[in-house]
Amino acid sequence: MLNKNLKMTGDVQDNNFFALGRQVTIEYYECGATAFLDAVRVEDALLKAAKDSNATIISSSFHQFEPQGVSGVVVIAESHFTIHAWPEHDYAAVDIFTCGDNINLEAAITSMKESFESKNVLISSDQNRGIISKPFAKQHIGQTLKHSNTHPISWKKDYEQKNPWGVLSSIDIYDSDPDIIRDADKIKQFVHELCDKIEMKRFGECQVVHFGEDERVEGFSMTQLIETSLISGHFANADNTVYLDVFSCKFYDPREVAEFAMSFFKGGHYKMQLALRQ
Image 1 (spheres, rainbow, N blue to C red):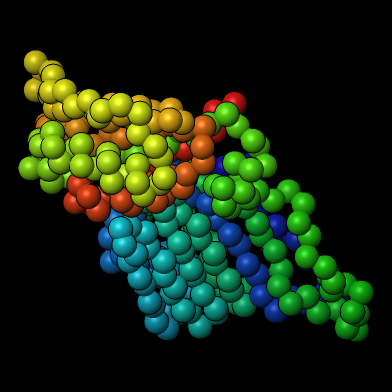
Image 2: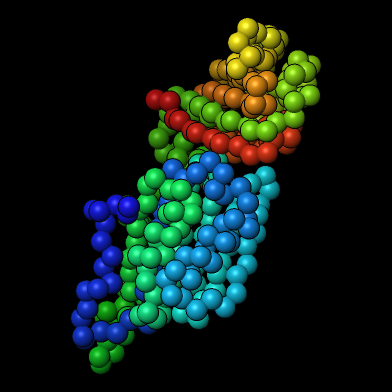
């Protein structure tokens, strides 16, 4: 179900005004683990939502990014459905714009919730676009862009604003190459190359130790002290997953770490969490 605290505001009418369109932005959180790994699957979900909403579909175009991520648009006669999905965060941002009164927005939003297996859906905005007064009055048109209540979208900017002690990123690389994660020398090579890439000075030797009598957790574990803290990881043989943690009091770009690890270990996809440690 949709968040009951959120209301679709388009049913409130003022006969003194006329809107050219209506735009709704929707946030889909806690989606299925594989919901956004395939551009075709995401495209099918938006096409279904458009159909379920009674929209007239004209065309669609979707792109799958490397190493992961999907963006796309469904053009409808009434305007469009757009999406950008972050598989590493099980999240998607959707925008529905319509210039027709026949679109069932609730049906579209619910359809995508089911397709994405989302546990938390938020309607972040619901607004009229192109408001025309009768007679037309310029004073009803906003003249400035408001910057209040916005959050930084750059991790570096967020880091600079909050000035934490350090940054911790936890990155899970799924479907990694089994030959690489079972090779201690390859793991050490990864650590050396990663430190060079994010400009972290290694302190001491990289330790790679095999352990785990239980087959479920068996694999190599790695630790590497760095001048600004620690890099650690576990390489699970059972499902070829890499669990990597990078903690540093010097800023680095977590996505750069994730994408380098994806490439090195030849992973299928990754999940990522970021924490600023105060």
